[in-house]
Amino acid sequence: MSATDASAPPVAERTGHPFLTYDMIREIPDAIGKTIENSASRISSITDRVKGRPHCYFTGCGTAFFSAMLGSNMFSLMEDDASKFECAQALELGNSHYIVSNSVVFGVSHSGITKTTVDALRAVKSRSGYAVGITHFKDRPISEVADETLVVGNGPDKSRCHTKCYPAGALPLTLLALDLLEQGHSVEANRLHTIRKELEEMPRLANSVLSSTETTMKELAETYYDKRAVYFAGTGGSCANALEAALKIMETSYLPAQGFETEQLLHGPWCSLDERSILFVMSTERSMYERNADCVRAASSLGATVIPLVFEGDRDIAGMSRDVITLPSVDEKLAPYLSIIPLYLFAYHLSVRLGNNPDYLRYLSPTYWNARTIIFPPGTH
Figure (cartoon, rainbow, N blue to C red):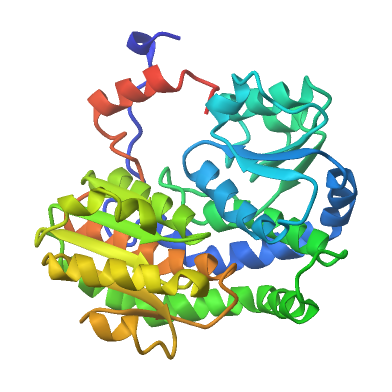
């Protein structure tokens, strides 16, 4: 179908708060719980297929790619392993000539239809690879290509601005890495035991973060709605959150927004910070805490509004800003599953404050809907 033959733009199901996006954010704790519950029995069989493979790819598009990034972060603890682990954009992976034979690929796609991701899985399989699909729907094209498909979450994300599917898509990868680590890698057993216990508590912790931060994030959105640009910075798994949170600002508020790994922000982009900017800094990576502190100090000195996200009990970075978001103290590999919640709430309430409908990514406009049909012909996303 050509763009000129495209169907009419969607009609808004809701026209005021609470929008569908809000409901989906509120469902994150349940989506996390259902994913952990339903994935547990499938992980061990996938673990056996992953062991001994020379290379492991994590791929997807948009929010799904950031989900793959987040989930793969736990694999960074396996630095002594003979296998190599790499996040690759689906378009790049599907058209690459350097795919390592006999590798594994994990493809995340909320819809299970995303053609670029399906093509990437097919490309790895063509070189004797093993493909795992992670999706929210049964019997979709990703399942036709994948050797194994994990259906995650607690049902489809009803908003076009996907939120709850982000942590749900990442969790199976975190669980898989933890399973591999528990089979003899050089990580302290006590730490792995703690991570496992904290994962069991994650739905409760996520609910706690929702309750403790929603009013604050709404107030921040109403206070800073007139900022010119929104930035996010973080290290480790929080780098994926920075990219995902910036995407949500662009999708729902149509404002300039960017996410950075903290050091990347400090190598040039910091020059664009000023009093018209707002910067969220996720400071939950203990080994890189001081560099995130440098980021907070430097941005504050430029007049930017800086909002750090820190663990409860933090006294250093928390004392540098008027507005601070505190999170339950968990292993730094799990912290991004909690810190994304207040960032989603800020993006949502900012969109509402600006008079937008966050559910549709501007698809209610015929001009933007027509552009979408060029980008995604029917059946490709």
